[in-house]
Length: 189
Ligand SMILES: Cc1cc2nc3c(=O)[nH]c(=O)nc-3n(C[C@H](O)[C@H](O)[C@H](O)COP(=O)(O)O)c2cc1C
View 1 (cartoon, rainbow, N blue to C red):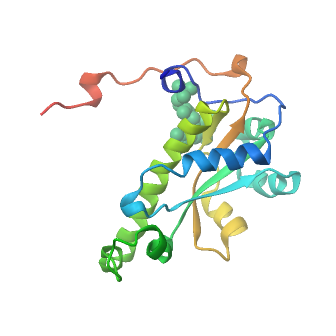
View 2: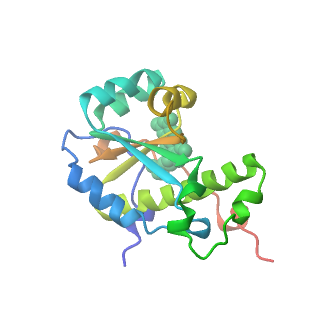
């Protein structure tokens, strides 16, 4: 197995206009859905912003310096989590008693648990996209509350970050940043 999807792949900044098809997005989800999550709660939700109308709806919430990047992306996924993820445990986690330990948690702890697993799933979504030949550009520079209001006002889904998907113009990549080395980032106890 090649490790290039970790060591060589970059966070894309500008994309070629090569389209990403709906079939590719469905295939991507079919791979990424196998990511681990707490008690298999699978709280990650994805809104694939693909049409011109949906892109126009999202654009005002993206900070100005990120707009040339997002404008070039054939697809922008709103990576979200379902704050009501426990509604699906009977199907996803039939091994848990009902009510489950999630129901005993304070609401903010339950929400945090969903947020944690959704972001972990999203990391594997990025790895899956790269393995399938797509480039990814995560974006945190946007108005998260505004996106929630515009896209999820009548929903229990809540935004975490945006993920541009497509085929990168690698010439536009930023110089690669350093990473903390093992001694800085890890402990051996
Ligand atoms: C949660 C998150 C938010 C990010 N937000 C932005 C952003 O708003 N704009 C941007 O250009 N890059 C953004 N990035 C990309 C990072 O800057 C990039 O992943 C990091 O510098 C490593 O770059 P590399 O993968 O090319 O080595 C974000 C990445 C993550 C994971």
